Length: 397
Image: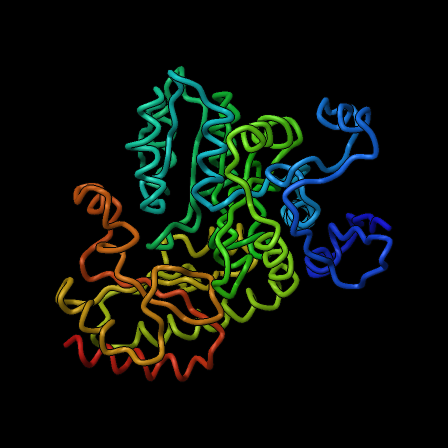
C-alpha cells in the first residue's frame, strides 16, 4: 500500500506520514531495506529497469526504498517536487555544483557560510574552472554588483554560521531571477519547520541531515530539494554515476528523526531565546548574536522570513582565544564538539574549529573573532545550561 501524501496536511503530519509505502507484510513502522541490490523477474525486466523504461529498484547506490522514504518525506516538508539524499551536507553542495555548473561559470556566495563550504568554493571548484566571489550576506547591493555575465549561481546560508546573520531570500531570489541565475539556500539551521526557502523564491534547498533532521547526532548525511528537472534529473544523474550516496540505515534514521522535528525545533527555539537573554545580562559577555533578540539588526526580517528564531546562537567575550578556551574547558555539562542540531547542547570555538582552515583575513571579513563562541542549544533544562555557562564565564575572567 502506498500512502499518498496530502498537500493539505500540516507540516507535523507530513513529518510523520509522508513517503510511507507499506509492503505486503503490512508493517506499521517503516522497515530498513539493508540490501545492496535488487532482483528482477526476468532478463527483460532487468533491461527495462536499467533503460529507465520501467520504474523500480536497481542498486542501492541510487535506488533504495529506505532512502526514497527519507527523500519523499523531506521533499514534502520543504514543498519541493523532488529530493536527492547524499552522503553528507558537503556532498549535497558538491553534487549541486558538479551537476549544474561547468568550467567558466561563476558563483556569488555569502562570506558568512560554513568553513568547509568556503574551502570547497575557494580551493576545490577553481580546479574545475568555477570561480566564486564572496560578498556580505546582508548587503543586497554587493550581491548585485558581484554578478558577472557568466554568473550561474547565488549561494546563501541563512541564518549564517556562526554569527546568525540573515539573507533576505525574497530579495536574493529577485536578483537571481533578473540575471538568470539559480538561488541555492542552505536551510540547515532553520529546517523546513522554521523556514521554507522554495516558497520564498529559491530554486534549490540544501541540507546537512546530520544536524537537526537527525537531531541526536547519530548519522552523517545530506540532501538537495528542488524541482524534477534540476534535482530529479541532473543532480540524481550525478549521484547515480559518482555515488555520493546515503546509506539505507542512515536514511531510515533521518526519516524517523523527521517525525519529531516539529516538536524538537519548538523547544530548541524556546531554550535558545531564554539562554540568549540570560547571556546578554552577563557582564563578561560583550555581544550576543541571536535573531530572536529585538536588538539583532535583522530581527524584523527573521520575524517575516522564519516561523521561529532557531536553536543556535553565538556570543563574544573579552580576552580572545585564551579566555574562550578557558570558558570551554571549565564546562561540565555542555558538550565540546563542532556538531550542532543535537538534543544535547554543544559549544565550539569557530576560529579554531569550523572556520579554522580558512584564511585569517577571510575569518576577519566574516566577523569571526578569537573571542567568539557558538552554542547549539539542546533540549536540556535551560537552568542547567545557565549554571554550566556561569561556571565557564567565571573561569574565562
